[in-house]
Amino acid sequence: MHKCKTPFSGVWNDHIHHSFKVLLVLCVGLIVGCHEAGGLGSDGAEAQSIAESVAANASPGRIAASLDGDVITLAEVDESIKLPLYDLERARFDLRAMELRRLLQMKSTPEHLEVFLQPPLPPRIELPQSTIPVDGLTNAPVTLSVFCSFQSIHCVRQQEIWQQLRDQYGQLLRWQAFDYPLEIHRYGRIAANAARCAGDQQQYWSYFRSLFSFYDDLSDSRYRLLARQMALDEDRFDKCLQDLKFREQIEADISVGEHLGLSNVPVVFINGLYVSGPQPLQEYQRWIDWELNRQGIRQAGNLNNTELEPKSSDAADGEESAQQDDQPLEDSDSELPDASMDGRRLMAASGTIEISRDWLLVQLEQQEQLATRFHSAEHEVEGFRLMRLESVSDMEFFQVLGLQDNDVLLRVGDEWLHEGQNPLWDSLSHLVDEPGSVSLMYFRNGLPQHVMVEVR
Image 1: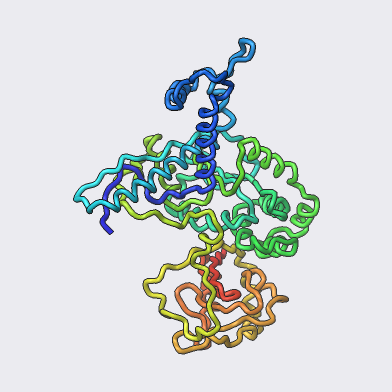
Image 2: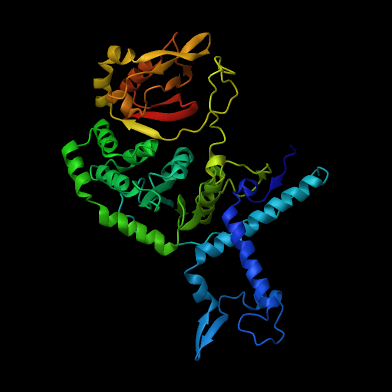
């Protein structure tokens, strides 16, 4: 595809919010319907055109209504609905961007193309101080305030992107969390309390990242197992868990989100700038760089001179879009295609499981017993059969790594795991000597899974 330059980053990677498009169309239909019927509150006399009315009321200082001489301004009306209004404005931009892309594709490829269509600036919201310990320096120039739920698959899938931001910006970023389990998240509040209990022992963010790896297995036994592998004081953690020690703080966070009108997660505020829903890396980079540039810290690298690319589908809201790479492996595929994986895009990790070095040392002493749980599977790679786990449900080592009976191990780091080699033990032993992380990939029910294992 021909590549051109655009003066604003990621214009062509923005996510189309379907629900807001529908709402926009409904709003327009309501206005038109009222106009045809004689206008809102009209006595049937001919009113101004819709265009003239919109223009006349565009100023926030304009009067929206008057009740016995007491006026209500447009600014007062807009104050409590800033975020929905921005969502509508963003939906309009997304529609225009989609249509502009279509029109450009119909024309011959130009030698030079400039695109001046830009997304609207998000509203800046002043948030209360989080009651969760922050991650990062107190004087970092950019603060990311994250509203999430440990039971949200969309929050899970943002973990890899947020880790890329940590790697890219380092100490320029400061992270603070707000608990915002939705009504459908039955275990969200208890999981939030468990993470805060870990924070009570200065391990909130390690626990935060690990717990997202088990969003579909939130239980007291899982919470305690994570605490044990992080070498937390188990009695203290268990009492905190049973007492629901942080119930009031969690409910306070939920109240903040409800007051803002948040209806989904994740929502991130970048120095207060509103970024809603799961987003690609470029969307976060755009506003982080915007804030850095605004403070004169460094030139914003993602605001200008960005290559024009087709719109990415990575940020789609629907489960079906988010799972586009999760195609089951058919039993008839005995030989894995493209076994070398050269040139293939590695699926994003669903989370990071953090374990303590001391815990791992104890587990590796049982290596011989652990190795007996690996059995030959049907599929082959590099001329060897892959390995399937059996009878591991009662073994803490496999539970901590999130592995279950019948999981088929694929890769540890850059190496395949099969009958000819099992790099798991060497990789973990290396992390005992030099703490760091390694990736673990496996099949579960025919679907690929990917987690990072980090040793502290």
